[in-house]
Amino acid sequence: MAREAEKKGVLIQTNDKIRSLKVLDGDVIVDASGCPSRIKQELNLKLGYIGKTYQETLENANCFLCDTIRIVFSRFGGYYWIFPRNPEKKEVNIGIGMFGDYGYDLREMLQVFKDEQRITGTVNYVIGGLIPLGLQRPFLYKNILFVGDAGVGAFPFSGQGIYRALMSGDIAGRCIAENKIKKYPSLLRKEFTEWELIGSTFIKTNLVFRKINPVLFYYLLNFFARQEFKLLSH
Image (cartoon, rainbow, N blue to C red; front, side):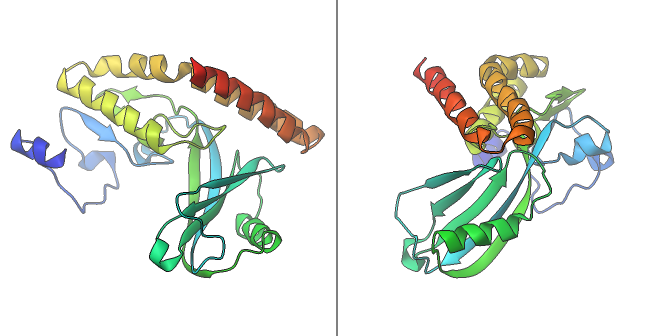
C-alpha cells in the first residue's frame, strides 16, 4: 500500500514521533495513535470507555499449541488469552484484559492464573496498557480522521480490535480518495452501530452486576454471546 501511495506522489515520513498537533500539516490528518489518542488528549476531547491489559511473552512454554488461541473469561470482568507465536521457540503470548479499570494488579492476577493452569516458560517480553472499549467519538474533528483504537476501539465483548481497525482504515482511505471526509462518521456508524449497542450495554450492565455479585458476570457473558452469534448469523 505504501509503495502504491508513493507512486502516486504521496510523501511518506517514518520514524518520526508526533508529540503535538502543532507540528502536523496537511489537507487531511489521519490519527492512528492508539489509546488514548494523543490528538484527542491535546484537544481535550472526551474519551470513551477504557480497559486495561497486561501481557507476557513466554519461550519454551508448556502450554504452546500451534494454530490454537485460547480465551478464558474471569468472573472479575475480563478474560485471559494464550496466543501461539513462534513454534521453533514454543513461544506464546499470555495476557489478561479487563472490561474497565478496577484497580486490580493485572500482573499478579496473571501470575495466579499461570499457577492455577500450571503454565511454565521463560518471560522474554512484557507489555501492557490501555485499550479503548467500543467507539471512541468523535470520529472526525475538522480535517482529522480518527482510525483504529483512536476511533473505533475494540469490541468490548470479545476484545476484537485489529479487524475493526483495518475496517476503519479502509473506510477512511476511501473517504480521502473520494474527497468526502465528512462522510466518514456516518459510514462508521452504519458499520458499527449494532455492535456498539451490544458492547456498550454489556459494559454498563457488567458495572452494575459487579457491585451485586461478580459471579453474575458469567450469566451476562452467556446472554451477550447468544446476541453476538445472532448478529453474526445475519
